[in-house]
Length: 118
Image (tube, rainbow, N blue to C red):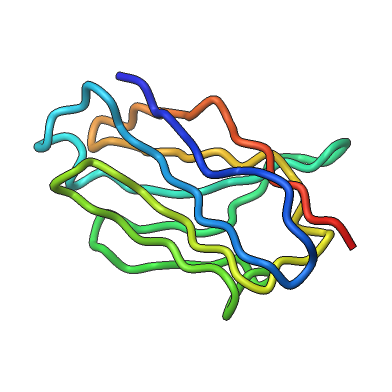
C-alpha cells in the first residue's frame, strides 16, 4: 500500500490549495472504516494534526485551521482531500496524509510541501 500525495506548491497569503492523497493498493474494506487525517510539520517543529475523519465519519479540526480548511474523502476512489482556503504564511509546512486501519496499522504519505508567501 502506498499513500500518494499531490497538490502542494507555492501560493500567496490569502490563496487556496487542494491537497489530494490516494491510497494506492488498498482494498475498499480496509479503506472505508479507517480513520483518515492530514498532519503537517513545519521546519524545527513537531508534526501536528490538521484535520481528521474518525472511523464513525465525524470530523475534527485543529483550532488554527477551523473555518479555513476542509477534509473530505471519496471512498469509491480511495482518495482523501484537504481544501485549504485563506492560507497564511504560518501554514507553510510539509503536509502528510495518514490512515489508521481497524488493526491499528498506520499508513503515511511521503509528504507534500506547502509554502505560503506573505
